[in-house]
Image 1: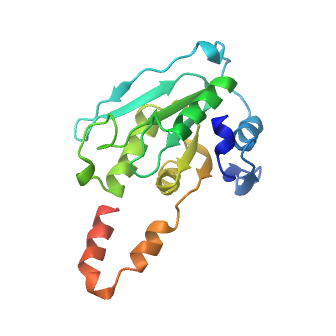
Image 2: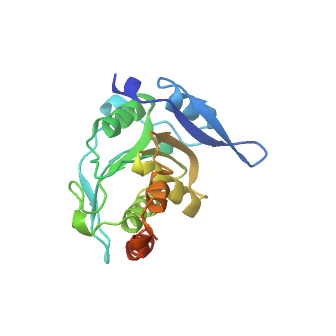
Length: 205
């Protein structure tokens, strides 16, 4: 099973004292244990095996349109945030959707602008633009509380999204989350590349 290939992950789940706690999970139990801990307030849907997803586009007047697939289901919903130049049809994204189907939970997977079926030019993409993509998915497509699953670079964007939308994000799951890679690479740039550093800072905001 594809889910079994996922590495050990950690999720931040709300505590009763309104704080947050890091909870480590194994590859087989991560998402299922997390979903079991969250009270279900939404009505149950039809059996997940009858649900299908089709390609849709989120139209944004001043930004590239985003390709996405949305699986209807109960709350909390799951949003998969892919890694660098990864597609929504990747093995991890499909495994997450199949897992959500088995539990009857809602799920959204999407392509960043300039990637896959979404509009835009990948050569013009920046972390700032992809951050806006994630927030657009949360704001315009997601219903109710969401669990964000970020893979690699998607883990970095997942953290930014959680900070920007704390009222909608109830938990985070990182899959090989590259939370410190960008900062490390940035700090390793030589002094003579100060202009490049300024460029990265401006285009990562």
